[in-house]
Amino acid sequence: MSSDTGLDADPTATAEPLLVVDGLTIDLAGEVAQRGILADVSFTVAHGESVALIGESGCGKTMTAMAVLGLLPRGFTVAAGQIRLDGRDLLTSSQRQLRAVRGRSIGAVFQEPMSSLDPTMRVGDQIAEARRLHLGESRRTALARAVELLDRVGIANAARRLHSYPHELSGGMQQRAMIASAIACDPALVLADEPTTALDVTIQAEILELLRELRREQGIAVLLVTHDLGVVADFCDRVVAMYAGTVVERAGVDELFADPRHPYTRALLDAVPQAGDPRTILPVIPGRVPAAGRFPGGCRFEPRCAHGGDPRCLAPQHETAVAARRTIRCARGADGDAVAVPGARGLTAAP
Ligand SMILES: Nc1ncnc2c1ncn2[C@@H]1O[C@H](COP(=O)(O)OP(=O)(O)OP(=O)(O)O)[C@@H](O)[C@H]1O
Ligand code: SF4
Ligand SMILES: [Mg+2]
Image: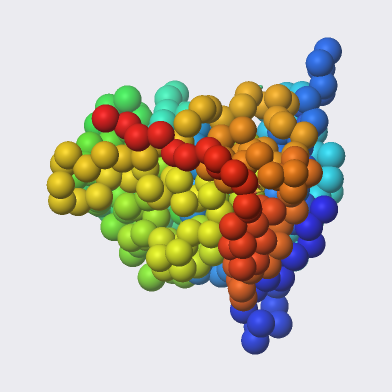
């Protein structure tokens, strides 16, 4: 298990980062037990920082986010590791304590607003109830604050919208209401899992701007799960790249985009269309992410890696530091030493 999460920390700071995920390993119990659906996942989020979780579909981003929220699906168990928020180990917290953390310290924003808004409750009541429950406010005070919050997230006629049910709002308004609900109790961390994927481009930009303002004004940290590398470049400070349930690279956003070190991260970035010539042939990553539990015994990316085939790649890989606050999980190691493989597999080209 890696315990090198300190690599993410500012060496001059003494306090622990806001969120520390350290060596998180998750298994699925059942007739055919699946081990290591997440394996040795480590990263940190500092106060006020924005960290992106990236990777193809099925790489474990949502599973990681759900573990932080204490909301793993039935059958999934934490086999190893720690998740600490403000120094408190969430994995040893009771369900009651976790509910308090979810309401008070972590706000969650998902792709689908109706997954977290209660369709049977007026929007204002949902926000007010959170403040009454977690902050002990009176109904009147909590409702007044709900109006301010709806206004803050850009919902016009907030006093009137307080009485709307979620289905009476447009998709963009529902997303704003969910953000208002997520920040209702002034959380230290907002966990946003593809918060703009279902929205059109203009609303996407507005929602991201809103999250940016909340970071600036209230110092809220954001853990952002997204497929959109443009959003990562624009919004995030650091990046955690995941592949098949493992973290393959951690880096500052500028370093990662300028010089991705892991073959998977490099291939992911290569797959992004560049502005300019629309005829540019884009490399794509051949093959697919293996299904949970069907991972190769060695490097999980080996069957798809342009540099695979080397005996070193057939052993399980561990995260190693390649620079301050930078890690990769690859046999190529710290200096990006090319694996000498005659006829190493190349990336295919997409039309
Ligand atoms: N409820 C579940 N039961 C069984 N397997 C699951 C369940 N939820 C997720 N998985 C599996 O766990 C792995 C990680 O899934 P996860 O949803 O975290 O991926 P993701 O990176 O969020 O993908 P996407 O980008 O598509 O949202 C996948 O192999 C997925 O099939
Ligand atoms: S360990 Fe080998 S197969 Fe895995 S990413 Fe590195 S070079 Fe590729
Ligand atoms: Mg997901």
